[in-house]
Length: 232
Length: 232
Image (tube, rainbow over the protein chains, first blue to last red):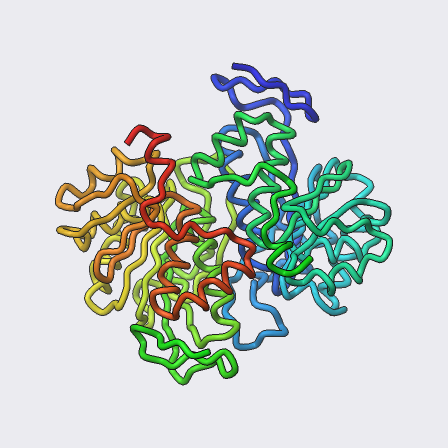
């Protein structure tokens, strides 16, 4: 069975799944990113890489390991992830993933660096995908102005204030507006990534990844029990 | 509202959520562990640590960063996680988390080391929690003998063969048998961790973590559409 990758125009053949073109992904990390915001999407991308040609740059303020622990939560636990590139050494890529987390708050040097990085690379991207409060960083960079977007529902008031010119959608598991895809909180990152994989590689590829992860997808972008829970 | 932590016998008070006792968790990593198998549970534990006293040891064959990329999949992507302890330097802990992944296969030194580590520490544990094919490592260590357990449904035949004296349960999101909790594949690690948090800290704590992660829990341990999908 063949699929055409709608955007990258690569023929997909389950018997010869590797293509001649590489999909180049970057993920932006900063101290206090939420672990599942990053590793939900990355697990999907890792499994995709078992059958498709994908490269990944893990981009951070420096090459020092980046902790999921926020500087604002000194008693919290964290795990340390090793970056592959800095803001200055990042290679060209097609897709930028931006997780959220407590570490998106404030105006520390890593936060301001992340916002500047999004602003700088956006014009060269095929897609920008944010998870949870990662849309707050994108909003502060200006790239969401005039676009529809969503964010974490518990942090709704705080994050939406950061983007007065963004058309915020309160009831959404995720929102796709052109080449900018934004998701609701934390675990919604898995659904937006699988929806994006479906858009680019076809439904069969997305379904096989979800089945392998034993994940029951939310395939309706407007499905959002957490908008009700948080009174939006 | 007060809850009694059923096992650790610590009074839980939402106004004063920190206790005087620390819950000590260890997670066992090895090359080729599946990212979401580890970071689904760890995200739950990280959020728990915002309001409760929890320590974490990230345990691996050496202190070198551990890749999620399996040595058996040279073209696949991986991310590198920094351990805090080796098998030899791990501190005492109450709960051991064991993820699965392609890296559980075979008899490389890290795999045999992981199996031996589970066997050695199990008698001192309050709980052993495995995710996905992590139950294959536990089965090979012998600690599952005579117990009910489950595993990844796509890898069912391969993993269950490793434990001929285990009472494998084919239709289960997770199985709790005494102090050994085993889950089905990948994303089921989130459900088993939240179920375990409910067991230890109460339903209110588990629900608040799930709501913060915008995760719709599977709270029925026998809910398993993937048993049907894979013909079990």
